[in-house]
Image 1: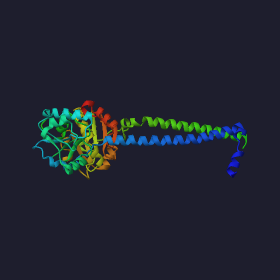
Image 2 (image 1 turned 30 degrees about the vertical axis):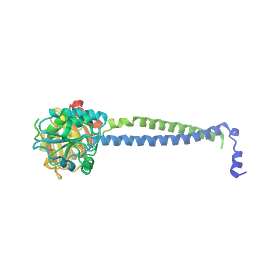
Image 3 (image 1 turned 180 degrees about the vertical axis):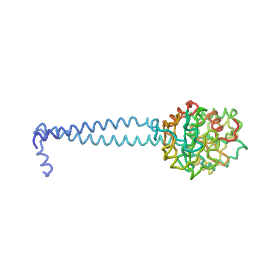
Length: 192
Length: 180
């Protein structure tokens, strides 16, 4: 018989005094409680950090102010005195597709000083939007599309100035009123 | 060990179990409340002091009424990330709200930086130490909400959803106008 088994046979908790038995039991429980509380605190801290990062991410615009979107040059300059709004037409969720279709349908109600450009950087464009935008939907070829996708960095739409700099960008689908209001404020010569 | 010693160890272990149990309960509460952080967290700075008009463009800052001071630097990355919040605040604000933008005089902003917005925002360039003394901010971007010349709130850094909501409420914006 090994030394360990000989020693184990000598331990008989049923022969211990009550206080010793309870003390050993509670010490084991203490060790378990310490491990559980440490794990719970680590998980809670991890989750807190995640949501704090999310709050910080939501505070930032998709494109920094005045970031140059050089990939949009290939889409052509807007007419003089008009502000250019680039809207990404692909990779939209079901709710976003409905909003994009509504925007395309309301395009004629936008101020004269605002020029809307639709660009599809992927194949999944809603048929309603493809019909409404028609020939105005630009589908750049692969290298240009990749460049523009990287530069847009998740933005759904961006207001560009004459130097192809982003003055305003958002991840959400805009409505016509919001586009008009932003362009009126930032578009310089845009007629109200 | 004597019985008394075992009893003492038992009492200590029992207290420890209760303590770690409370620690676990606090951790579980924190875990459950974490999603609300995106709607409640806002880095706040000094408040409750009188804002001084330390620049000619800020002459009307101590006047009665609501005012918003935007402290920025043109070469500050966080300011570029936050400008969309300020654009939303300016376009959604009541006409009665006054806006001021204060930047460092040693690194002035290019003319196109505030193009369009300068119709609504009074621009000032001042020494950083003067800005710190007068407005008690030393980080950009900072958004100060001033009512009747007294700084009601200071938000430091890009406006989180909670801070943005508070600023929009201050300037009298309707939620549907200001957007998400």
